[in-house]
Image (cartoon, rainbow over all chains, first blue to last red; front, top):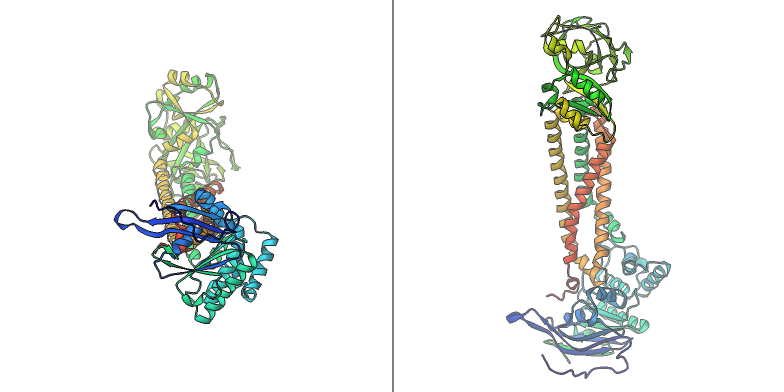
Length: 238
Length: 375
């Protein structure tokens, strides 16, 4: 794997400062005969406030892209920058802290904790970071309003519809004002109308909060709201 | 405990079941420790009540010293003069069978643990009713356990073997026993007649003997010289409990049962939290993906364990105390606060250890699974 870096998709204004930047990232899973190249020399830059959608069939490496971008997995080679910090140079402990402070995840399913009310789901990331104060509570109420869940603030996940759960997950991801928002198949549990609505909301929040947002999906019908769309095939981004 | 308490409330059915098991173990713990204290009281409360720090036995008696040891007058005199010894007095101990031969309950057979002592010694009882011991009076002071069998002050008991007649002159109204037999106090001369089973005049050799030298030693006293000179060995009062018949076997049996109980509680709690932690795997992965340090999740889980264990143990102990107080007096049972606190503390301690082993799995959960990227 000595192919030189070809940073052909870098948006120059975003490099170095905020946002997300992947430089020539390769991720090989497993080893020996079973080794699979999940990411093959991927470079990608997302500026603050930009909404990038990555489409591709399952197994194309979309989830690996999120895992590496969000510091859940260390790439085999290449570098990842989040909000100007080189994620790939951090220790495990520092990466955990970076996830907590700079990265927001919206997961596809079972992404809420069963015993917490919607409002408590939002407060949890700040409790983890030891910053659960009046400002945090006010922000939670604002975000609940923004995703239209104020009337559901006291409900638990099993009382919510799929769309409401997804909106609660989005609001939770935004609680820490992350630099990077990573969204994994947000529409897998939703019908067409609700999918479009959910994606519109993500785009809206991206622009409002200035997050560098990457959404991966296999659903090619929900890309209208994106600022840019990339396709992923066999670990390569086009 | 942001999550711990909310999970407790949310999954209260499951936690209540496990808590009930812990509570039942706590009930059993209280009853067992009550039984252990009760058995200990029945076995050695007579020895515990003696105002001494040590007992010196004939060095040839190495087990069940109270029935095997014999010491001579010259021994307690030598002990009394040794440095570091505040008091050294002869003490006699023997178990006999007797019958009420005069009194309301004439014909009643009683077993007696006879403690012999000089009437003016520090060992002599202070009766709550009647009179104390008198030199050459052949009177005895009984304790509550004998009185409960209908023996009263003024009755006469006759020893089965020696035919020695003993007039009951006083009563100590406490349950004081030795080897599960009620204690009576007698002067040394009466004790010797009972011990050797001989009425009338005793042989010369027997007149100077007792079972042990009851000692009050100054702290840190070095008594090896006098031990050597008199061919005796001093044990602390607590160590002599093991010389009481059956005491060591009873306490080791109780300790074994209690040990099993704690092991069971550790396993039950460990098994529950293992299943619970495995069930929570997806949520733990999510927490880690959200940036929660492993320490945060572990602390939360352990706090939950402690809340459950302390709550369940408190409930179980309360129920155990209620049941136990109904048993006092009907069985060898007595409730002692330190023993119950220890039992409850150990239950919580062992349960926490079991659960700690279980929640250690939290460290192994991979946050990547939250993403479903490991497909």
